[in-house]
Amino acid sequence: MSTLRQFDLNLLIIFEALISECHVSRAAEKVFLSQSAMSHALNRLRTQLDDPLLVKTENGLTPTPRALAMLPDVRQALSLVERTISPAESFQASLSDRTFRIASTDFFETVVFPEWFSQLQLSAPNVRIEIDLISEESALLRLEKGEIDLIVGMDKEQRLPSHLIVQDWLTEKQVCLASTQNQNAKESLTLEAYLALPHIRFFDLEGKTDSNVDRWLADQTLERNHIASTTNYMAAARIVANTEAIITLPYHMAKLFTQMMPVCIVMPPDGLPAIDMTLVQHPLYAKDSGIIWLKQVLCEYVESL
Image (cartoon, rainbow, N blue to C red; front, side):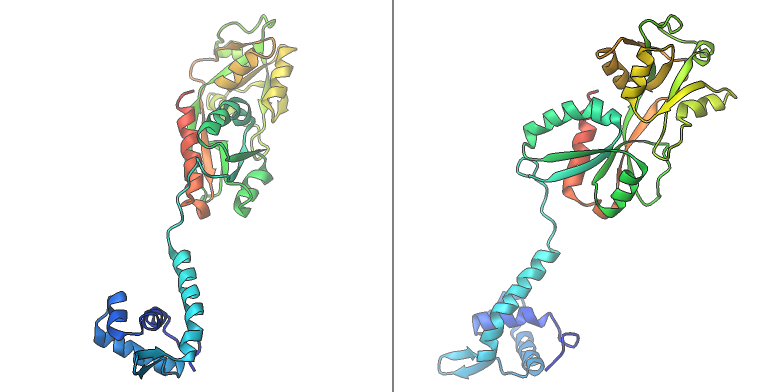
């Protein structure tokens, strides 16, 4: 009796055809072999299994008890292998009830998610989305563990492990937000006026506060006067509404705040850089048709912003 390592597993396909057909020629046709090749394979099976498998009788070839006992298990094994190596089923949004887990910035959660998800419900009514705000642990570590599917809205300048898949998602111009009562923040600011005002700044994923704005200023040997730091746009906007400070933030976030509190958009100095946001995915799931679909609908939505 052969061990599994010694057994040619390709012979299981031959075995299933032979015992199902009980006829060498028909079995050969079924698996696209010549009759002589099938006869040779039958002899190999008999040797490796130490059983005749098919015996000549007055009714033709008849399976032995051993062959009949093996047949259901062999069919099940072949079916399992076939399912395992077959291409993954394509994702069908209209039928899926999958839950996608996203780590995101409060920009995505506040500006994009409500309207985007409302539209998503029309084409994928049973798909569920779970949002977790980005932090160093919940984003990168959970992405590595497979606990989240996608990071949405990550600053392109954020340093990330090189093996992660990073895709451009949205380029958003930055503007300033000031209290409607702030007499020092007019409709637009010169660089000198911008630097003269107090600023609220934001922490990034690594807890650092040197944004692309600060690096842009540093290239000119300039810096802002920061009076407070936060990770939350809403908190910063509420401070701005009641002080002389300003914040620099993505345009659509600023526009939303003007509808919620006594603040207004002020145009920043010429040359202020935009913020480039990305989608970040683990390469283990690069071929996941569901995540491919999720990235596609996210990109399609922001094209209309």
